[in-house]
Length: 94
Image (cartoon, rainbow, N blue to C red; front, side, top):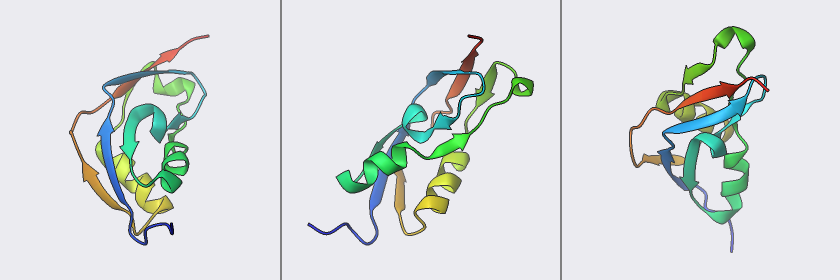
C-alpha cells in the first residue's frame, strides 16, 4: 500500500509529562498521534523544544507549537485536534 499523499493526523495532547533537564521534548511524549502507520514513528520523534536550565522546572506546550513543528516536517499533513488541553512538563533534576 502506498503512503497517503495528504495524511490526516489526529492528535490529542497529554496533560502532564516529565522530562530530564537538558533532554529534548518529543511530540510522542507530549501527544498521542494517530495517523497512517508509515508516519507515526517519524511524527513521534519530532522535537518540540529543548528545555534549558533557565527555563525553570515547569513549561507549557501550546497546541500552536505542535502544529508549527508538524507543518515544518509534513507541510501537506492535515491536522485534526481531538482536545485542546495544554500540557506542561516538569523537569527532573537528576
